[in-house]
Length: 257
Ligand code: SAH
Image (cartoon, rainbow, N blue to C red; front, side, top):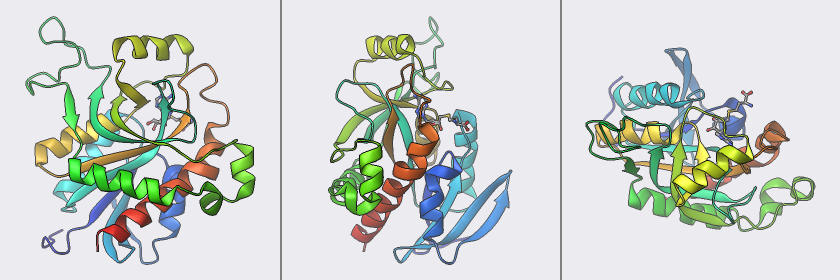
């Protein structure tokens, strides 16, 4: 596929269908291109050319998806939107985290390389594009100021949601669903700056770094990465996170014109 820079789409990626369901419904002219077992939904949202895709879960699935978005679809920016476990104190279920940088918490080639450093990259952390992350955080603050308006009163009551706080900082990724108090505590000890943990973001950040393409990530906190992390996980995505993703992306796309 060839695309001139003016037509180059913005890529919007989630790991799982439920995370992107509301957004896909809002793309009227979406047409799927099937590649490597994934559907790339090419269409328009908020007047902008968009390619939306489900990466699947985990770092390898995310990296494959990102490489295809950049190489085959010529994406001019990549935005990841999904859910994550809250790590830092004060990062509560229903809050939103926008990454300033991302790290693979399960990368460890020590003693050959410092813990977490990606060998031969000379770095452990990959920065989100500051301008993109800044506008994404602004869009989140604007779109989520009134959760009742986005979700309806029922969902707000069911999940005891307050006005979501938008946090900005380090997101860590690894091929583990962190679902015990012991494991999340170990991550907090090792990486006290980490706000949230998920399974894809740092991989996409690394691929975007390789291609020199701007990347940003937004995660709604679905759980606290503790022993009850799996409880209501799916329902939270369906009722809350999916709608937050759509609201924030629409606000962000509106800011691009
Ligand atoms: N229940 C799902 C599996 C979810 S895996 C199923 O059965 O298909 C968790 C997904 O949500 C990943 O894509 C990850 O990025 C994110 N996530 C949310 N909370 C997480 C946590 N506590 N630890 C790791 N990833 C988490």
